[in-house]
Image (cartoon, rainbow, N blue to C red):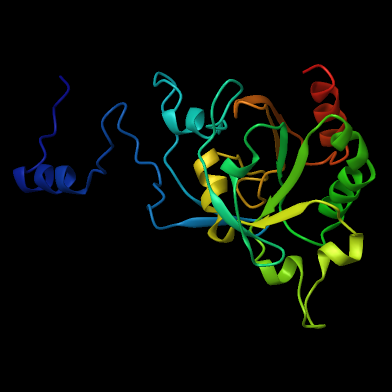
Length: 225
């Protein structure tokens, strides 16, 4: 007859105390990045966020990252008064009654912006023939558009521009008009508007990397007005 061996009570207690605890099903402990952690990619700084579960809908922030211009075709854009390359005030209202080509560009003396300015310069007579004025707007201060100091750029003189450049310091007008930025917000957008005689926008054209296209598209529309 087989005999059974009983363990002492204190041995059972020791076995229970030394048994490893396993996490409950579906509650695996995963490393979580704190809200203060960051990653640096090509000089850009991104906050780390927790990944959504498979059952959750896409994050709303991903949808909001697509920025659309506030001023669209058919709108009357917000008015403004800015200083030109001579330091004189110029208002949008003063151009009412004639077609206006208004283009926002990132900065003076950069390759793309110089190419765009020269393309508008070379076609300026065609714009005049269509009865239109041309204005360029950037965040450069007036002294960088046209200066007396030899240590700063003399953009207007260097490329012999026959039209007005305006200084939007602080990007106030750019923000009011909702001009979108490029490259994750690091590069000011290159966007052109054609405004008709009544002050209504007839064209919004955005193309950061083909500056000359802005001239082609605006002339095409002006010839159809």
